[in-house]
Each structure stands twice: as C-alpha cells, then as structure tokens.
Image (cartoon, rainbow, N blue to C red; front, side):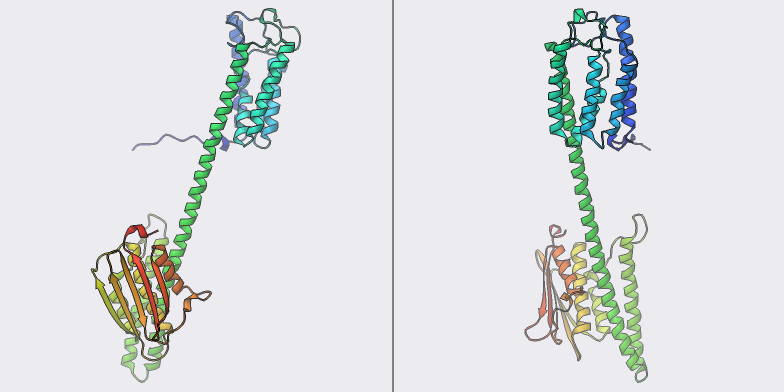
Length: 417
C-alpha cells in the first residue's frame, strides 16, 4: 500500500511564536559560528566588504550584541497585528547591530521575515518605500561615521566600515530579492484565497441546488400520492355501507398509493444519506413507470387518456425524471382542482429529434395558475425543473375550458445543469 508524503502546513497557520523562536536560534548560533570562523581564519567581514583579506575590525558579540540578535525576533511577535511597526522596529534593531560592527552572519534574517510579512499583509508601498529610504539613510550614515577597512578597530560604539560601491550594490540586490520574493508569495496567497473562495461558492451553489431538487422531489412524491389517498379515502367512507365491494376497491387503491409513496420516499431519503451507505443515491422515477402512474390516477376515479408519439427511447436521468414529475404533478393538480363532475385528463408525450414535449390537458373548470400564488410549489416546481434542463414551460387555462400544462425538455446532456 503506497503512502503519500505528509504535507507541511503553511507558516501563516503556525502559532505566532514559532517563527520568532526559529529566527532567534538561527541568528544567535549562526552569528556565533561566524565569529568562531573569523577567529580561526582571520576574516570576519562579508564578501561585499573587502577583498577576502584579514579583517580584525569586527567587534566580538557581547551582551548588547546578543540583545540586538534577540530583539529582532522578539519584535516579530507583533508582525501579524502591526506589520508596519514591526518592519520599522526590526530594521532599526538590525541597523544598530551593523553600526556596532558586530560579526556578520544571519543577523538580517529577522528583517527579511518582517519585510515579507508586511508585503504579504498588503503594506506593499510602505515596505518598498521604507526599504529604499532605509538603505539610503543607512549608507549616508555609514559614509559619515564609517572608517576605511584598513583603519578599523574595536574602539568606540560605532566602528562600521564606510560603504563601498560593491558592498552597497550587494545589499541593494539582496533587498530587491527579498521584496520580489515577498511579492510572489503574496500573489500566490491571493490566488489560493481566490481559488478557495470560488470553490466555497461552488459548493454552496451545488448544496442550494441539491436542496431545491430534494424539495421538489418531496413535494411531487407526497402531493401526488397523498392526493390519491385522500380521494380514495373519501370514496371508501361514502360507499362503505351502500357498496362495500367498491369501497374495497378504493381501499386497495389507498394501499397501492401508500406503498408507492413509501417506495419513492425511500429513494429521496436515500439520496440524502452519507456516501458509503447502501441506500440508493437518487430517485429512480422515469417515463418507464408512466403506465403505473396513469393506472393509479384511473384508480382514483380520473379518466386518463395517453398518447405517445415519436421514437420512444431512453432519456438522460435528469430529463427522464423531470418529464415523469411534470406528468405526475399535472395529474395531481387535475385531481385536486379540476372541479366536480367527470373530468378527463389527456397526457401527450412527443419524442422529437432534439427535445421531448410533455403536455397534460383536462376539461375541468379551467382553474387559474393555482400554484403560482405565494406558498404554492407545484407549477413553480415544474417550471424550475424545465428551466434547470434548459427547456421551456408554460401553463394556463385552455380557451375552450380546462387547463393545460406544456413542457419542452432538451434531449442532449448540454441542456442539463
């Protein structure tokens, strides 16, 4: 079994004290190592300060020197709350360290971290301008108080060497490297944040669409079957004394409708279960169950005529489910709202080359758009199903009486969203 290498967390997620502790360790022990190397080799200056000859002019680390090496990392504890103050204070501490002419080593590391933190935090102009002005001030000061390398000694509080062209260019170059690196880190962090934001928005959108889809499924399943149960229960109560046999038929229809409701409810609830459970992941209703749907409507006392034209063929799951639910909800509305007296519903399914047309008409009293009122969800749910697939939907009273529902759903996958 292969195992992947552990991924390190970003420094920005570490506790605020971790980086200062690491920087303090590197600065103190790195500077001690540089001082030890200077004592052994006779060269304590950096490569930009002299030509590689002996340089006895560096001061050994003493209490103020260690304090300066630890002061910069200590100030880094403020880098997240006040990055501008931190970079200015660390720059001052680092400048004093170099003006004191202590041994060179990783002493500027705290300043590097402070500059990067300020740039990543968005204080780009202040950091760039501060770096330029700070270096200019440092070079001007060392030009005033610095001494030539040949005359350097350890007397006086500030024994810094006077600047040279090579040394100044080296320092400016490294400052640019640090600033450009900080900009690259900032841009990468921004891209990562934008990617995460887009991913979160997409997840929220998908969750919202899934909740809406489940709401439509629950409405369609419950509304249709419970309407059938309600109608048949009324018939059974009315006929149980005068015509027990017909009442028995109504009760059998109630049993069948309740069984169908339970089956479809299990499918909807299964789609809500966590991944890995054995329940089905999506409802399975489709036009292959159209005959069962029409039979249940007829058993509820509704006269239903059906016509299927075109080349009948398997559909994509979304289109198949939407077509079935539109027929189911339309028949439910006919049962509920078509009015008294015998009512006939006509269901027409037309398979075209690029779309399937679903049409349900009745000859009832021609009710208005019942489910477009506030709180209604039947016709609104059908319209949403069609729109989600890139299809069209319209519903309204027929000119000669009754009500018509029509939906055109695309057959290709590109229409699904």
